[in-house]
Image 1: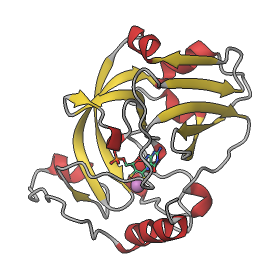
Image 2: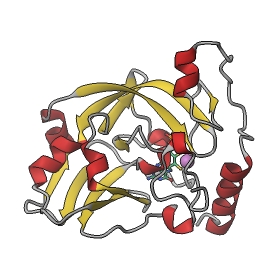
Image 3: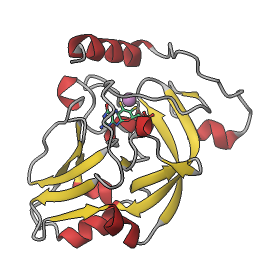
Length: 222
Ligand SMILES: Nc1nc2c(c(=O)[nH]1)N[C@H]1C(S)=C(S)[C@@H](COP(=O)(O)O)O[C@H]1N2
Ligand SMILES: [Mo]
């Protein structure tokens, strides 16, 4: 078993104090307004896609993988790899912002719109919040409406290749408008609720909304 207390303390310290990343290849600062305006306050651009998780990286093959949509839905469903591949495949290029203060721009995610998967499940009218579950036991929470955005994907490919295990392969979620902890790696379930239920980091003081341009890192960062 990993030493949870130690891991959590270390990660929280990293996010609070700023970037002491192991060896990020820092992107040269440019004068380009577009890049500057796309970089949230307190973030440093990187090009090397660091790995961030609790140190448990479940080994899920496409054959093993399923995604279940459950809770307040009229049509609870489980998709396997073949079912996911049968859905419309899209690409979305978006920016990735980790609360530990690195951002990587122009990530080319491939996958399926979460809104399309949710539509198949027929959310009940009083379902307003979701818990996203990972195979490592990780959870994170969002308003259901946040998953309807056109850039929110169940993704199986990035940077031109299938998602590696360390980055959440075979399938993860990406929610580009929020800090990256809102996107579960090794995606296993989407659970719909009437009321909000804080996830793994959210019960440990991370901000419930997590908008990077508002620097909503911790609950006390209003
Ligand atoms: N299942 C799961 N998903 C997770 C995490 C995790 O520990 N478990 N960590 C989150 C955090 S804090 C970040 S910053 C991103 C990092 O994704 P990456 O490792 O692909 O960079 O994954 C998020 N999704
Ligand atoms: Mo993170």
